[in-house]
Image (cartoon, rainbow, N blue to C red):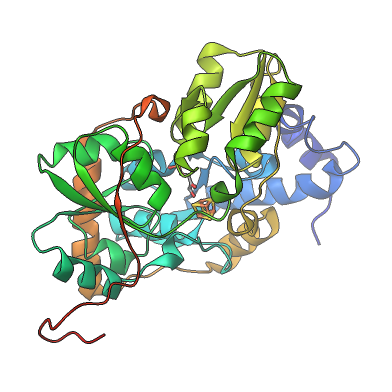
Length: 359
Ligand code: 13P
Ligand code: SF4
């Protein structure tokens, strides 16, 4: 049984100050022993916690060693000299870490930490797409499983998608599986984009009408959107980019009032560091991100669970696709400047009489 001792109170006092607006002081005696135990175990086991920007403030501000968007977390996973990586995020992120740090133990604290985009497509789907569009390079969003990455030429994230597509120097690409990201990329490039009908269950819910209502109710509101939102929402935003690009925008521009059209824990995390900015919060939560908690992070470190492994037969090709993206070292653009462009959208491709494929 973990106790809130005077030593725990002393060791966690700075952390409490950081999250005081998000964790009521009556809850601190329950939360602090978990935070303290995690931070002690990290030292004894030489472990790091890589946390996505959507993690709750207790994880983001009190136990994470590194926080960031999908691209930054992938880069960090390849650099760390820890023996154990605990991924405070979702499963595809942990797989990406394992691909880039194959000799390390990579743990995901929750088996519920999936992703609607990753679940929308399989390696078999990509093989069918390649048969339908022979010779067209496959760019897959990192929000995919390793078997999908293994079928890809290169990966991308929301931070670098446009530049990855353009770096291939081709007229046509497949950009899978997020149809909204594909449309938002197509709006910024002359490269023809073939998409897949996957959606993020958090970002697909936002509408341009909802954004308009927030603008009417809040004069001077600055709207930031994630490119997993529909092109209508992105076009209505003042700025659109990856989660870290949005955070950077707030820190550099200090808008008086801001609406971040994305998963809602992120506003809490940034608000803790920018008290002068007022955040308007439409609360769309990602249930997968929220399935990671202090309690299961602690259990993950204590029992080394749940270890992420990738079958050898796919790991090599998947690693190559992720590594190519990392090696490109390209960063992002503001998505809100795009001009709507049409994309071909595929889903569960049925092929004609192609050898070895039916249906
Ligand atoms: P980024 O942090 O890479 O922008 O991705 C957002 C997201 O939805 C990850 O699940
Ligand atoms: Fe997947 Fe969307 Fe959740 Fe990110 S926010 S993990 S894209 S479901």
